[in-house]
Image (cartoon, rainbow, N blue to C red; front, side, top):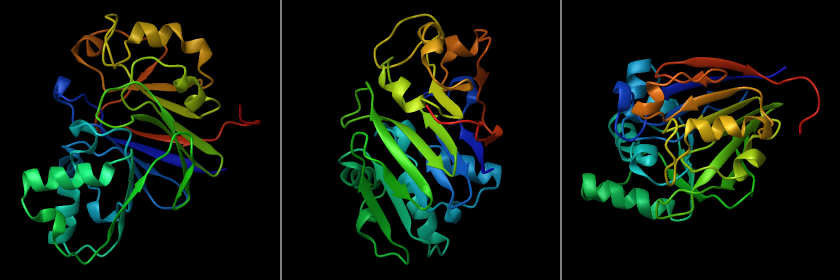
Length: 253
């Protein structure tokens, strides 16, 4: 039975609530490692956890906000200065290449056009179109979060293990489809009870718990209110948390 290791390198919101680093989740399975999101603090998170950035060959981005993709310029530049040769493939919403290049030029003018010893390839995700990434089947599901490009929840499958990830979004039934039959659902819960645009509050998530076809839910991207609130029946991510996830017996939903 295949097993996936889920390493929360960064589990925080955009503002570092609770002293947490920004979104960065490393999946290790039978094939190549896959990074879900790469927030601005991701290079710090990798080096703090002893993860070699040159090992990361594949990144899947849920959406194009800085706390979810802003670490890519630093990941690329780190590889440039540390003799990286392994190609880097970045899959993200439409316009991902232009957005990353613009970020690189804003931070380090001229850096997006430098010749390197490794290739950086960009692949645009399409709504519910499954993309094969080195042993991972990644399927994006359109969600609701203003970010200048279509935002997605992501479902990553390898062997019989399925990991679903909400990205940032207000409640939408697309999350039910993304998490159906998954072995783990990583879901943002920025707020606790207060309803807000573009984000899920814990009370709304709890109210929809029975509709989500995944018995194991881990909260991430928690704001101050959620961090200070008890969330019975839900696991909570923290920086450095490592989970080992195996496939549940029986057919998929």
